[in-house]
Structure formats: structure tokens, C-alpha cells
Length: 219
Ligand SMILES: [Zn+2]
Image (cartoon, rainbow, N blue to C red):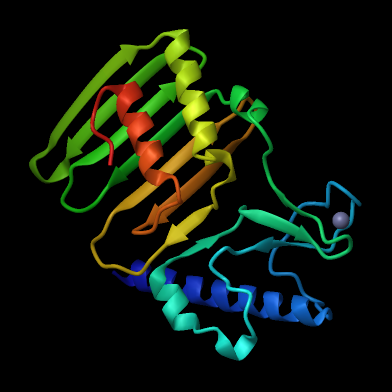
């Protein structure tokens, strides 16, 4: 509970600072950046920032922060914008980055369970599905091998869900709700996306694909 409240306060602070950034950007006198965002791929400029989809393009005094926050927020790694040349882009483009994925781990659940975890080893074509009910100490693991065609189908579903361009964190303040995480591993780095009671746009399509490839419940 304490960590939950701490997280709420932390997110409100991040959200406020993002809002300030957006406001200053409109006035074109931004001096501080909220976070380090990548170089612009068009002009190589460093004056770039994250766009938060939940921030409406409205005048400062028309933005109701509390209302936005309680409707859910997502932070980081969504869409970037360059102030120098006005270019807007996403971190990953096209299907190619999906071919570099080595492993995917994902989990979802809420107290008191069940919790579902799925591990997909793209290289070895292995899929592991775990269902756990910690309250009664019940864990069930089922592993299976899938075909190359099935893996290709999965990757194309993930592309349709725009998985790699999901934000780093999705959050809505609800007590005892559902938490989820996705870890995407490449050969030398990984990316983690997490959420609590708030989900990316194509979340249902994602859980359907994971459920199908693992032949188990997910979501
Ligand atoms: Zn630029």
C-alpha cells in the first residue's frame, strides 16, 4: 500500500513535469527537458522530447490534470518530437525490429490470482505457460514446442499490436487491480513495459495472441 501511494505521487510529479514541458514547448522557450530522448533521425537535433498521448493539445488552464491522471497515464517511449525541424516519429519502424526478438516474457494477474506467465523463446520455438494461485500454493507449468509458421504468425500479431512502440509504463490508480509486464529480449539488450489497471490500445489483441501461442489463459 505504501509503495502504491508512493508510485501515485511519483507519477503525478512526472505527469506535472511533462505538462510543464508541453506548455513551455508551445511557448517555444523550453529550457529543461523532462528526460533524455533520442536524437532526431531527420536533422540529428537534440531538442527532442516524448509526446504523452494523454496530454491534450489545449491551453494550460483548460487541462484538468487530476481528471487525466485518474483516467490513466502512460509514460515514456511512445512518440518523439523534434523542436528543431518539427519531425515526429516512433522509436521502431516497420516489421524488421520484430525479427530481432530472441525471447519474450509476459505476465498478468491481480490479487488473489490466478497469475499467468508466458515465456516465448523465439529461437528455440519453445513456449512455456505458467498458472499460479499463490494463496493455495498451486503452480501449473505447461511447455510446448511451436512451429516456425506459428512463431511467424505471433511476430506479425505483435507488429499489428505495435508492441515495440508501447510506452514504458501504463498506470491508473485503482486498488487491488490487475498488473502486467512484458519483457522483450534482443541479443544484447532488453526492453520492459509494465502496467497497472491501464493498458495499451491493442492490449486485447496482444493477450489473445499470447493465449493462442501458449495454448493457455492469458488476461
Ligand atoms: Zn529534427
